Image (cartoon, rainbow, N blue to C red):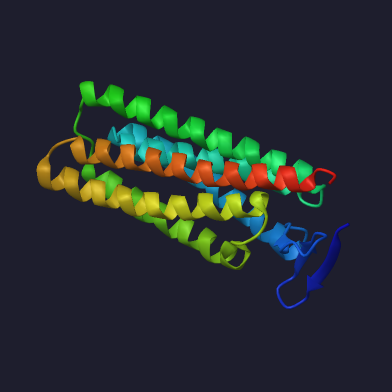
Length: 220
């Protein structure tokens, strides 16, 4: 049996399971839905801007970050669609997002390995400016989602992805500094590899929680 209650101060509906299980916010509040829609718009706009800048600057790190924006836009849409559905459905959606994030990480790893063999020095100035703009966009998303970071797997995956984006943007700016100082593509490629590892680590966390919630949703 599930018991639901609402905290009107922040517009959060929490769910408690039987046998004293810890409550996990399931996203079923108008406030969270409005914030999620805003974050989806931010990520969609930044994907378009960053993928064009990444191609123009020849930056693998920028293109990896743009791909992350695209993945987030799609998976946040899934998060929005399954809000209010049974725990089993939300857990399956989170599992799908975790697997997608892992695939993204593997793609970035393989793409970076390829570019190690074909290294063209990217434009550090473009990397730095676009990385800074993307950082501001992601910090806005992180601040909007901050109070929802400990929800169920579906809600938590949104927080983890936004946090990863902000970290990735800082890394892109560091890569731009390294490219400018060394006139080499290696800082860009190293940062892309680190970002891929972060994608894989976050996907593991999401998959673990989603699997646990899938088991929790099954009849005793």
